[in-house]
Amino acid sequence: MIRKAVFSNMAFTFILKTSPNVTRLMGSREQIVLPQGEGSDGSIKIGNSIEPVKMAYTSYESTKPSFIPTDCPVIIMHGLLGSKANWNAISKILHSNTKRKVLAVDARNHGDSPHTTELTYNHLVEDLRALMIDLAIERATLIGHSMGGRAMMLMAHRYDSGTRQFLLTNLVEAEGGHYKWRVNLDSITRNFNNIATFPTVGTSCSVPTLFIVGANSDYVRSDVHEEIKRIFPAAKFVTIPGAGHWVHADKPNELLLVIKEFIQSMEKLEENN
Image (tube, rainbow, N blue to C red):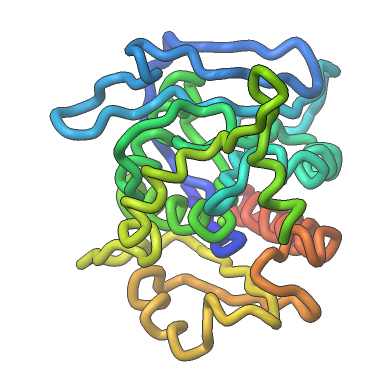
């Protein structure tokens, strides 16, 4: 089975064994699902140390019959201080171009997802894993930006055998005409060092991986390519001219084309194997 991956904006497809008895059907092309927590903060227990939260997400899908495989949806996670709303337009176009179901998620302490005192990449990975188990998703193409991209990198590594208006999307109206931040700034500040760097890992992940980098961004410099390829030996790099760190905002059409070509190339590899 071919596994695949894109990072920084990043995406990959991988296999996750889940319970076949858990299903959920969406009846509309775009549906927002808010978290329904098992505990007071929306968390559910998995294992002895990490308590994943029930992430909020928006689902983009068609109710019309299609011959395109629907068992490998696309899951998108935003960057630090972002939300699923940042990816609304791209999610719609990506669904239209690939006919795949697209899920744009809110990371914990962001958007409509629960707030917690913990925020590490381990927690983000377990949140994603819990979502896939809940939705009975065994295969998915994961896309993450910045913090979300690093979360997808760790997910692939662990479980395989990617401006003012931007910030204002986090400002919401509260009672009495006041406004409040819907991101948990206290937790984000306290855990910033956990998010600023990728965790140390001692082994490699052999999935085909594509790193998409804005030419004007210094987040994925050429001098770190060797280290990236140590962890992801099958990594390839695509640089999008004229884009900075926010590739999906600066060059959305170019980004969509790269992701579409990557997904299609992986589908051809699967067909030949």
